Length: 139
Image (cartoon, rainbow, N blue to C red; front, side, top):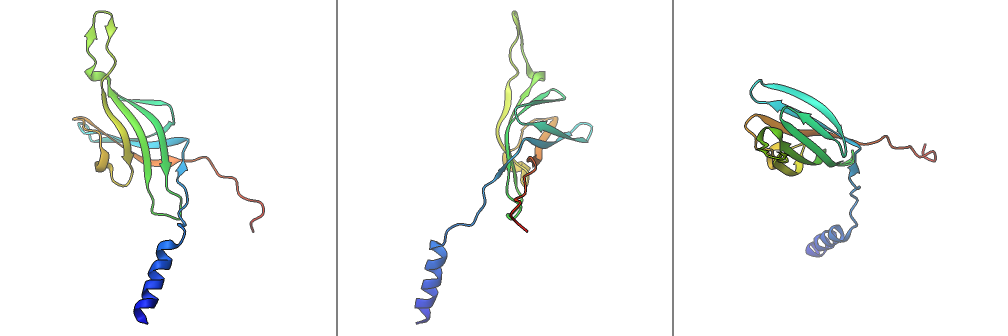
């Protein structure tokens, strides 16, 4: 009898619909930049689709999301980082700066997907979503 009750509870748990809310897409992301030479950190807010110029880096922010407030906090940002300091000069001008990083960065674990650069570190702090309109029907 006891195995039947435990089995029924386990089956009900597996078959229950998920109550997870969707991630919240932001209109800008707050990035923290560290200059390893001077030990200087600065925070920047970059709109989605814009490029931040920091030192010799060009940091393009393509997208950011954060988890809803009722879940474990996490910020995700898709960034592409190029270094103008590595640009080679050619006869007709300059070659585009080489891309050092292209991918998702995670706010809670910056080392999981990090920029590998001898001078700079970049990581996301927050994904800034537009204010949400409150329902008038709720009390």
